[in-house]
Length: 149
Image (cartoon, rainbow, N blue to C red; front, side, top):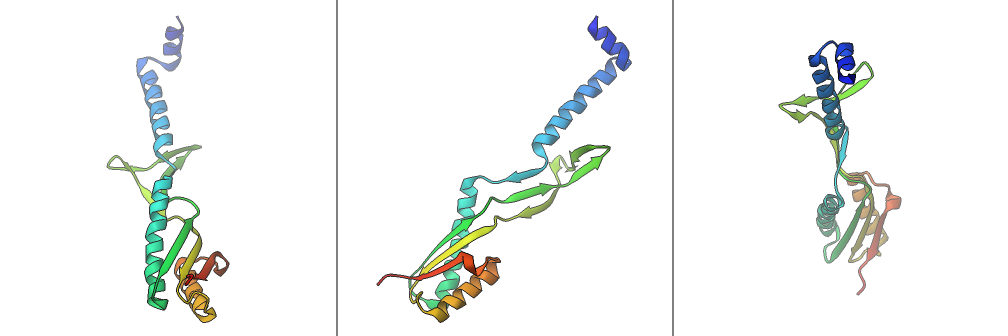
């Protein structure tokens, strides 16, 4: 009885199928769309890669032993293209895949460098300036210290 009323209200069986299909598509878009961030393992890998790059840079400046720690604020982020119309939002697909608008790397929160001659003020300024410029990190978030002898 209820199905007959619903069928009459919607004008036959086809609109019911379309309604269900639209609802399923909406749920799929919500799951696949929006922003996607990475796991902590991927963040750690990014931090290790950046630490290796920084280590090579600092070795070029001062030579000797160098140890680097990098801390990232959040994971890699992907933003997908959205089609917004009449109050609804859908992820734009191309060949069945979401269209990527922008991918952002994690933001580096802080850098610690321990190196030989790290207590030399001139070398500290050079290292801090190089890292601040290369990574866009405030000099207040970069620490340079000397290796114990």
